[in-house]
Length: 523
Image 1 (cartoon, rainbow, N blue to C red):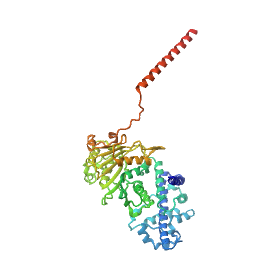
Image 2 (cartoon, rainbow, N blue to C red; image 1 turned 180 degrees about the vertical axis):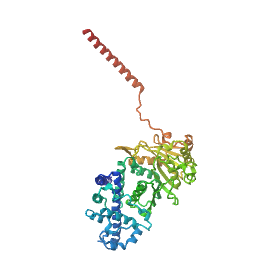
Image 3 (cartoon, rainbow, N blue to C red; image 1 turned 45 degrees about the horizontal axis):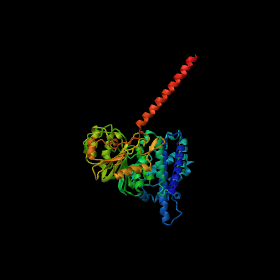
Image 4 (cartoon, helix red, strand yellow; image 1 turned 135 degrees about the horizontal axis):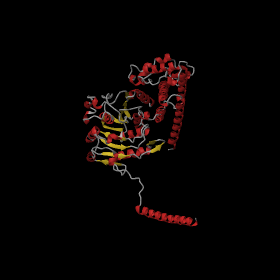
């Protein structure tokens, strides 16, 4: 325990230092806009160190202990380009490594052009190879010529040099020590800080770590490994990566799959994969509209699906005559409303789910009780026994919204035809303006989910017939009684106290009347 708390303390110190650097670098640029520069520079540093460490280790193993790729000539390094692209997915010349560009940055009057050339060269090194799609456009959001960095080239270069120095100063240890996962951890921390400072927009691309952990643990109960993990609205990928953190390295056998509609967030997601040391051949992140243009049709189904899709967004719905015949949506016989795509994401996830898989999805509460086509979709899900559990979460868990959301857990291979309802609305602690799930809160919820037994005021296992009687209402409050926390009042005791107060009041009135009478006599 002492070792863990020491490690945690060190981690917090590193985090504080990282945020101080990121905050100082920001200057006049809005933090939300500037995140792409800090995270992009971290990525550049990471892949530079990762490649150099890989080459150096190979030479050390071959009996050349003093070898350093960073000190090699570009001409000599070129000979290894083809082999490295095959093995690592990309190539960087020694002169273009982070450490060497940074060393000359302060005296480089064309630093913006240097960085632009380096980033283009990194992306182009993957062209024509298996990793091309993973590197294409990765640095698109790192605009070295943006006025946001400064009004003149000199000012922009000054800021870029500071950026390189700042990221170099981040104490992220050696990339060889993957147990620490310091780059990935620092990335997650910065994302959290940027999201919490960004208001509403922050919640659109980032699911807090505590909620990610809960979803992943719900989806992996009883499993030591899974074939792959999928998120149909993957944002920056934090949720996808939790599977490896929860199950352990290499427990996700085939890899990480996701789709994201926003191109900037899509780039952040791919960067996040690399920073967590996920090889280019172990992830497939696509940039398209999941509901109308899904990108993983031909893949085998997913054993784990975790997602926090956008709440109540508009989609084509019945305006597109093809969607009602889409094999993902057709089984329910109706489409989610055009103004509320929530259940379209649910149907899509169900369609992609393996027979032995679990999907854990954060939902807007309205989809659990509204009528119309949403009720018909719930009927389909319940009648076919896909809904395993509904969990009511506390309010204020997410950035940019105070809504008390729910989790729907779906399975295709249930062993009973009941639905477990868990009221976890009080399972949290308050941290500044938000609520947070502690490890104990998460354990409590997962234990209730695993045990699948009735517990007063916490959870109830409800039969199919009862859900049907309730017109397929899936709100937790319909089935789990809330504990009455109001103070119980003893009426007899209260009456006696009131009687006493009234009697005392009368005595006071009599005293006042006496004083007034005396005053009148005297006058």
